[in-house]
Length: 185
Image (cartoon, rainbow, N blue to C red):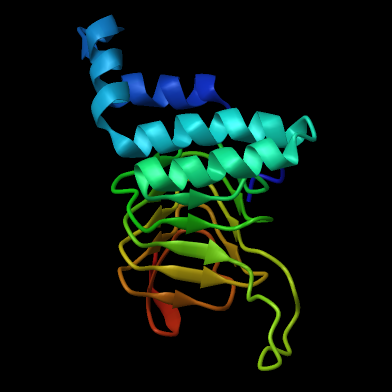
């Protein structure tokens, strides 16, 4: 884990230009405009960065309202209280839920229908309260669910349809429901 999550729009844009919108390694304005206009994952993260700033300025109601708008337009429910590092990618943002208190490192790839959050308050849950921490360079494939005070190590890949209820180390492939380490590298 990186300790401190330090996500910003500049880091997201740098990451975007490393993948799209360049000619001979130089960014193009038309490439950037195309990405912003047609990529809902990019739109969702840009909007999140905006209302995250509002949240940090103690404009919580406005931040929550913008969060609802983000959900309406992009299909991603990203709480303004979540901390998302630079270079995060929402490849297919429909159904993505990132709860308050979640910490996501840098360069994390998230596919559709991924849920990352706390276990909630329930008479059936007697475990420790808390939220997930996702390391750097992690990939969360389709329909992954990460719940509770777990830590996912750096450079870890979580296979599709996995249920994560415990922590996993750096540099491994994890899959299953409940998930287990399939391979370490």
